[in-house]
Amino acid sequence: MRRYFWNLLISLDQFVNTVFNGDPDETISSRVGKHVADGDKSWRYALCKMLHFFDKNHCEKSIEEDEGK
Image 1 (spheres, rainbow, N blue to C red):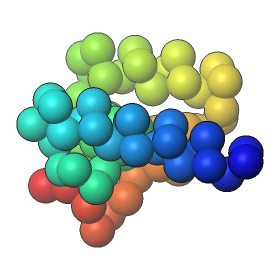
Image 2 (image 1 turned 30 degrees about the horizontal axis):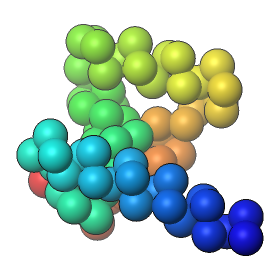
Image 3 (image 1 turned 180 degrees about the horizontal axis):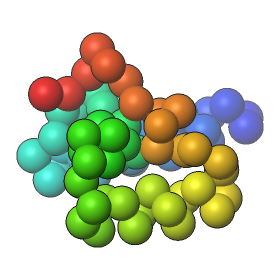
Image 4 (image 1 turned 135 degrees about the vertical axis):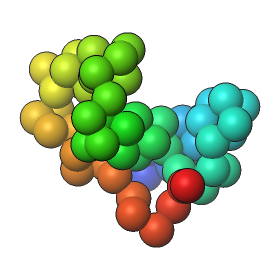
Protein backbone atom coordinates (compact mmCIF):
# COMPACT_ATOMS: atom_id res chain seq x y z
CA MET A 1 0.00 0.00 0.00
CA ARG A 2 2.88 2.36 0.77
CA ARG A 3 4.29 1.89 -2.74
CA TYR A 4 0.88 2.68 -4.21
CA PHE A 5 0.75 6.08 -2.48
CA TRP A 6 4.36 6.82 -3.45
CA ASN A 7 3.46 6.14 -7.11
CA LEU A 8 0.44 8.44 -6.80
CA LEU A 9 2.66 11.24 -5.48
CA ILE A 10 5.10 10.80 -8.36
CA SER A 11 2.28 10.83 -10.91
CA LEU A 12 0.88 14.02 -9.35
CA ASP A 13 4.37 15.57 -9.49
CA GLN A 14 4.69 14.67 -13.18
CA PHE A 15 1.18 15.96 -13.89
CA VAL A 16 1.93 19.36 -12.35
CA ASN A 17 5.18 19.51 -14.33
CA THR A 18 3.19 18.77 -17.51
CA VAL A 19 0.64 21.50 -16.71
CA PHE A 20 3.53 23.97 -16.64
CA ASN A 21 4.73 22.88 -20.08
CA GLY A 22 7.25 20.29 -18.87
CA ASP A 23 7.95 16.77 -20.08
CA PRO A 24 5.11 14.46 -18.97
CA ASP A 25 7.58 11.84 -17.73
CA GLU A 26 9.76 14.20 -15.69
CA THR A 27 9.30 15.35 -12.10
CA ILE A 28 9.41 18.97 -11.01
CA SER A 29 12.56 18.27 -8.97
CA SER A 30 14.36 16.92 -12.03
CA ARG A 31 13.35 19.91 -14.15
CA VAL A 32 14.28 22.43 -11.47
CA GLY A 33 17.51 20.57 -10.67
CA LYS A 34 18.66 20.86 -14.29
CA HIS A 35 18.09 24.63 -14.25
CA VAL A 36 20.00 25.03 -10.98
CA ALA A 37 22.84 22.85 -12.27
CA ASP A 38 23.09 25.25 -15.24
CA GLY A 39 23.55 28.18 -12.84
CA ASP A 40 19.97 29.42 -12.49
CA LYS A 41 19.65 31.48 -9.29
CA SER A 42 15.94 32.31 -9.56
CA TRP A 43 13.04 30.86 -7.54
CA ARG A 44 14.21 27.41 -8.67
CA TYR A 45 17.36 27.79 -6.61
CA ALA A 46 15.29 28.75 -3.57
CA LEU A 47 13.04 25.74 -4.08
CA CYS A 48 16.03 23.40 -4.20
CA LYS A 49 17.44 24.98 -1.03
CA MET A 50 14.11 24.39 0.72
CA LEU A 51 13.96 20.77 -0.45
CA HIS A 52 17.59 20.32 0.64
CA PHE A 53 16.41 20.97 4.20
CA PHE A 54 14.19 17.86 4.04
CA ASP A 55 16.32 15.68 1.75
CA LYS A 56 19.99 16.51 1.25
CA ASN A 57 20.76 17.29 -2.42
CA HIS A 58 17.20 16.41 -3.43
CA CYS A 59 17.20 18.27 -6.74
CA GLU A 60 20.62 16.97 -7.75
CA LYS A 61 19.62 13.39 -6.94
CA SER A 62 16.33 13.79 -8.82
CA ILE A 63 17.79 14.86 -12.16
CA GLU A 64 16.71 12.49 -14.94
CA GLU A 65 19.12 13.06 -17.83
CA ASP A 66 17.01 10.98 -20.21
CA GLU A 67 13.85 13.02 -19.58
CA GLY A 68 12.91 16.59 -20.44
CA LYS A 69 14.49 19.08 -22.76
